[in-house]
Length: 394
Ligand code: GLA
Image 1 (cartoon, rainbow, N blue to C red):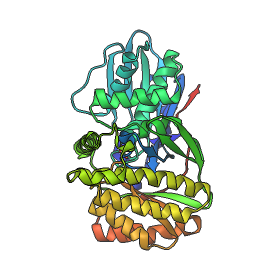
Image 2 (image 1 turned 120 degrees about the horizontal axis):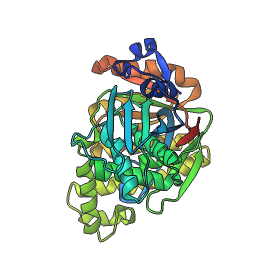
Image 3 (image 1 turned 180 degrees about the vertical axis):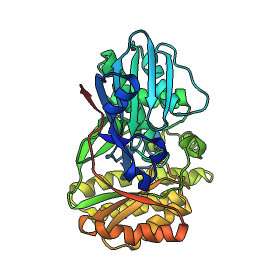
């Protein structure tokens, strides 16, 4: 895996091409003057369908993508953790048993938070040197935070001799984000970063944590478009939506909206009624999407994606005019099967299902008109479905 090491160039495609591209091992060597003992690598994700359902005990269908974050590590003498982030060209250091919050919700808090959550779960950690680099775009709805957490957790565990199954590791990372960083994310992103399988979407039942791998069709491409309007999750109405869902469930006499029926929601006040309606139908759409994929009915999957977007726009109110424009342009483009916003919303990316033979025309049909209309330098990339967390020893 290779990434540009100069953070100035990270999200600028032109500079990116000119940048010196180096491996995570090289970053580690340059920083710490020795060889790493292991590399843990975790992917970002795009969610095909099932949005704002994970924290309602519902269903999600993410795909891990070929944008990853890697952490190279080697045991250090003593009990100090030393970290270098190539992304931010910044370092951190703390005594392994006592990670503390910076109070600024920055990258250091995610790394320290993972150590805190592992310690809190009763694991013993050893001092390590850690170098981190990656190419998951930040704050764009592709789960760079979860990829960072899962890669760091994989590195800490491997270095300290801790064996943990990927599901448990993902939940430890979610706890780090919820309780240490203070962002109330659900569990989808960490589970996708830890548990995914190449060539497949990952169906997760967030109530039972049962999962199923659903093969993706070979003649269809997944294209992500970054609207270039971005807001960190901690600064959006994400927590407010969670609270609304948490208020709607007891008002309907159910433990979570997973158990609510659409015939019951009439008695809810607005906006809770619309929030609940989104969650109830979105769960149904995920299961229908899985059936559509299994029966090679991609046209049906496309319809479900458009319906999901409309519901996120009108009922859940997490879309933006930019995301709506991208989806509208996609709905008129040739070879487009389906499109919707992906992730929390409030900016970030859309996910598009495109017939392989129409991929070459996608930029002219969707991205260029978007750039012309908004003046925003939207970027697109064609994704492959990759494996979740991989740890390799040098
Ligand atoms: C963010 C959260 C996830 C999930 C999505 C919305 O990505 O981290 O847990 O709630 O939003 O589906």
